[in-house]
Length: 305
Image (cartoon, rainbow, N blue to C red; front, side, top):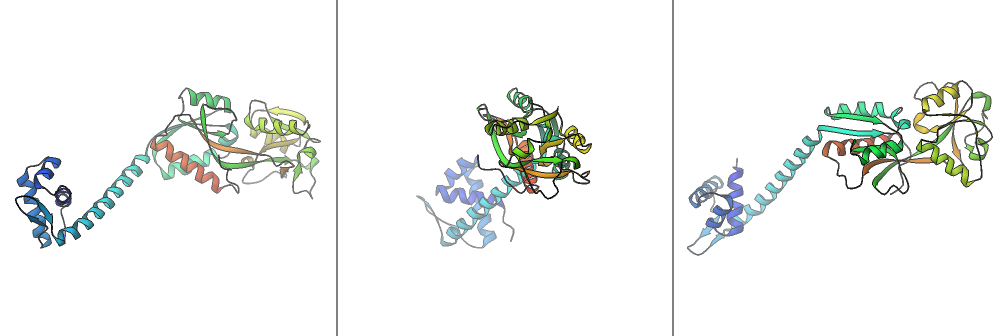
């Protein structure tokens, strides 16, 4: 049996108002049109749905049963249509975002490729920026969201943590202890170090832990890109202190890669927005996809905010 949805909506309106006249007013139709639709529905079902009198309209037993089914069916249909509409809205649009270099150089290419496969209708613009520049771009609305690190005291922004990433020591052969499974911060301070410059957020994490323990690195070179750190470590110039995401997927060029302990160094990766910003559907889809994908590549989720 194929029931006309308009007939069901008319039926529900008459049942809720207990009046053909008020149902007609609500639906913007004539009372005779409403009556005709109810008669057609009764003919399709083969049962009388209302007891009519000059004073009131009452549901029959069959009408009461149909009202329960009709409400449930239309609610399910409306929910499904809303869900489909939201999904279609997310599958097209534009996302403008920024990302810190230590993530963009390693994780971002595969992330963008995978997102494009899932959401081919969404176009993106990405800005590679230091944390300070990223926050400025968010404040000026040059970008809608950012992928970066938590910044204490930055009250104009919302940081949504989703990943805790370890900071590692990339050690070339001249400085390796092959029996070691980790390296302490004090041990690391005895080796020639290649570090990111002071403008980077990762450097801030490292300097804070060194200061708390009264330690000082034997810094040999400061650079601005993790690719430069890695290349210099490969040449045996010193130990590169870099995030775990910088670990290459292929040949590690004989580097020993150890977690830094006592303390265990890590950084919190966040989705960042300017306070008061509500992400549009496409940006929300990208933010959720980013969290899901990067978490899947890490053993440790971020601690709660």
